[in-house]
Image (tube, rainbow, N blue to C red):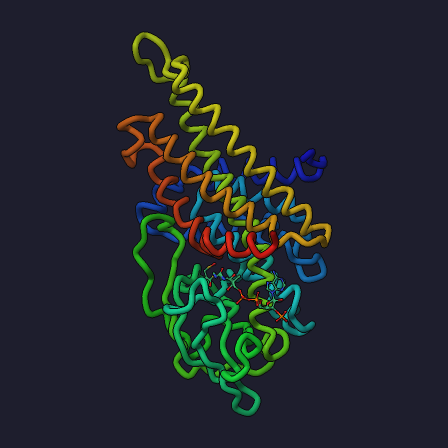
Length: 375
Ligand SMILES: CC(C)(COP(=O)(O)OP(=O)(O)OC[C@H]1O[C@@H](n2cnc3c(N)ncnc32)[C@H](O)[C@@H]1OP(=O)(O)O)[C@@H](O)C(=O)NCCC(=O)NCCSC(=O)CCS(=O)O
């Protein structure tokens, strides 16, 4: 895809910020499990946390291709930070942009777009992951409130976030039409972070188990109509998957660039390893697969931006990019040899960070379900 001048300018601006302000501290944040709060504030002040939010609600209303390019740059600098930004921007903000009332938009979007608040998305439950309709969290109407009870699992920014889009059953007899969406400020009494999970990678992004203990939520925080929740969830996950695929391209690119630099410096058998055909061919394959994934991502983003159907293309992009990224990161480690396995070089962290992209916001097999339904 040929980028416009504006898209190139946005990509380059994010690249400059990410390489100067995000990349240098990424390894330390990972080691210390430290949330990138200050870095997110900076991203917000530059308009990069409201890229999908309309200008009249404080966003920068950039197109989806620019957004995908921006996420690639953030991910190339810090995979964990890109997850927080991706979840915040797509499944955190977009449900409010698309389904919110005027009052909800005015209350939440300006602060989300500026980065004063970080958004999240809570669909998954301990026993309802891929089968999104199997939720057990209940929202019972009580006068001008709903009372939410239940548990959520694997929620990005569940601890450090401020506003989470929560899905719960309002009518247990209505099946998929009995699920509704809610905007939940995380300081609502009854909102509990049960556990911040220990995990393989992405250590500076918190992934939480949540509980709602008879959490009373004003009825005006219901998002969309009663029963519209599953549609709100799945339609936004479609956009979210383009974001995850962009992250994969960014992380794979960072691993590739590190391996390429190393291959030009490291000498064996009297010459840089880049001059050994086995290494050069490996790098050629890595570069080719990254570019293929990038074009799939940008194509899906362009379709969605144009308002055209892109369910299949978004799932294909996520499936291909996430599997490509693990393979490319593994090949990067191989290029470094033993040093690639050490925490001294970035490829070890990137390899750990990228693995989850085949799981969150729809596993590879869920993407195959979606793709095969459209065949
Ligand atoms: C595996 C699934 C695809 C199966 O889906 P279902 O068969 O249960 O649902 P459907 O009957 O297909 O759809 C229900 C309803 O929604 C409408 N819909 C579906 N997709 C879209 C769309 N892309 N755009 C608009 N509308 C859509 C559909 O038309 C139906 O409405 P009607 O009945 O026609 O009115 C699905 O279960 C699935 O995708 N599973 C994976 C879930 C997933 O990705 N979970 C991860 C969530 S992330 C999270 O919770 C936290 C982690 S993080 O912090 O990101």
